[in-house]
Image (cartoon, rainbow, N blue to C red; front, side, top):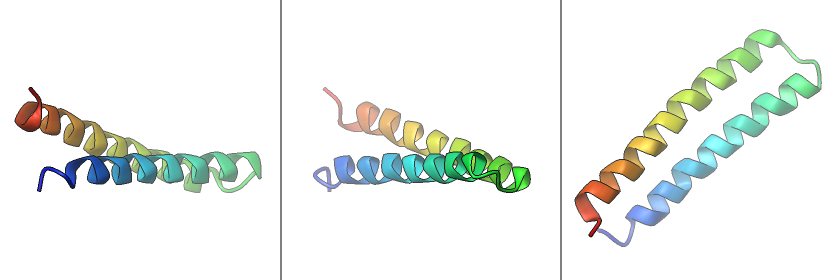
Length: 63
C-alpha cells in the first residue's frame, strides 16, 4: 500500500499540470474567459487535493 502513495501523488501533480496547461493554452488562443476561469478554479481544487495528499503522506508515512 505504501508503495503506491508516491505514484498517487505524482498522478495528482500531473492532473494539476494538465489543467494548468489547458487554462494557459485557452488564454493564449484567446478562448472564452469563462472557460479559463473555470479551468483555473478546477486547478485550485486539484492543487489543494494534491497538497493535502502530500501532507497526509508525510504525516502518516514520514519518519
